[in-house]
Image (cartoon, rainbow, N blue to C red; front, side, top):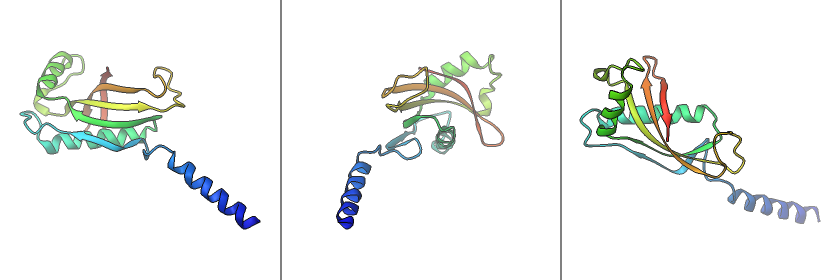
Length: 143
């Protein structure tokens, strides 16, 4: 009898695990990274460095969201935002230490972040600066 109960509970537990989210540590299983191979500002390697650093920082923050995708916003958007924010944040465009990223993330059904709705996908832009120690500072973000 105990063996039958143990087997039933094991099966029930196995089936319940299949229903769980497929993301691990805030990264979607089908997470996408997009770089701009035609960029005249950043090489693909530079874009990937920003994206990977942002992704790791995003996960480290322990936010109650799942990261779906990150991409470089492109040269035109980059130039427009740098021109707008360069005086506000003392950005030197020649240093190439600031990049504009498009970030898509989804909140969970138990979301407790007051400004975000549960079970909702958001597409935000992040203007981030790479610090000398290899960390990023978010200068601006929003939708």
